[in-house]
Length: 521
Image 1 (cartoon, rainbow, N blue to C red):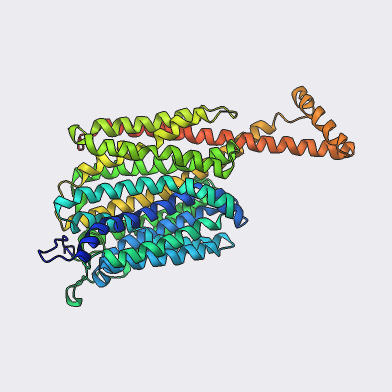
Image 2: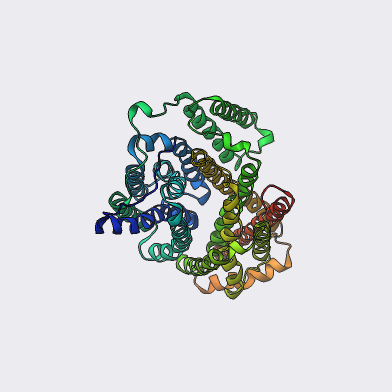
């Protein structure tokens, strides 16, 4: 059922209607921009947030997982809510609840409290990209749609760049809670704008509403929760050595398979999967998943490299990443003007994946004393990946869909995005922890009394502590503590480089797949 109607003012249009139609696409763009700002800020400042609640950064993987699971559940119920509230009230309510979730985040003092607050935000903001993009596609007449979509995409790029830039100032000046205060006030303001300017659409009479059964929704929730628990536990237990994880994985996959089978056959499903019959769409989903995995992992590793590996202050790291990301705005304008002249979009997204491989390889080769000038180029190029991969694929993946099938297919794509983000974060954290232990073991093996290089390093350091007034034994202990700190720092740095190497290999594989496939040209 198509519950969207294009906005077409009549001849008696008033000035009020005129300014509303002007602000309508801006309100939609700001709504999804807030989603990208929130996610980018949480990922970039995860170390500061973890320190604020007294937990190591890897403990916040529960918050990311809770957000992802709740997002998928929210996406599944998106149409259900729209039919009862309408698009305007649904988006406005989601923004208000997002503000409430941000307030809960500022009041969190433990990983569990933060995970619960992020789950609320995930449920209401996870569907936001799909809700807004579907409204742009089906709620605008074709003559106005192109301009609205451009505002939409530029806002995504702008807010993604502002998250580290503005967040760096906020965290340095006021602490990590300031990030969530910022999203809280922004959510309230954008909600008011949406309720004022977005036209009423989408709501249907009670007797025409679809009534999908509840049990598949519960099954999907349990399946996703089971698989997320498995991802968490891989930090501590190898999969092959834990029958419990194997059984939980099997149970999750069976429940997920049952959900997909039910949705495929049911006349009124939560999610229509018929779009998967299109080979072009299936290929597009694979390319999307690869892009979202690589892009999210790259952003996380860049943040960790700058703040932990290279010891950049949080404000400086935010400035560097934010300012280099702003270059994508100019590139987007060029893309909008000239991309239509390129008939074969494959020659954009294949080089896009190779660009990701080049960025990752560049960062993987950085020495520990690298200067900022050597970071500018890869960080600037990172902002172009959306233009090289996601937009060309989007232009082709949905071309064959009817008005009724487009919303469901876009929701599928949004689910793929959330799952890829969660899997990416979990994978990189697991790899980072394993490589950290490996490098610490290798480096610690060289810390022995018989190592002449260690004795040469410890002698002046011990003498420094003796001159500061410590006894010889205390000075020796302090000197060894400095060595252990140095080993941990070096192991962290080398672990980040290993993560970039993994992304470089994955990006090359993605480029080869993109070159090999024949469905999207």
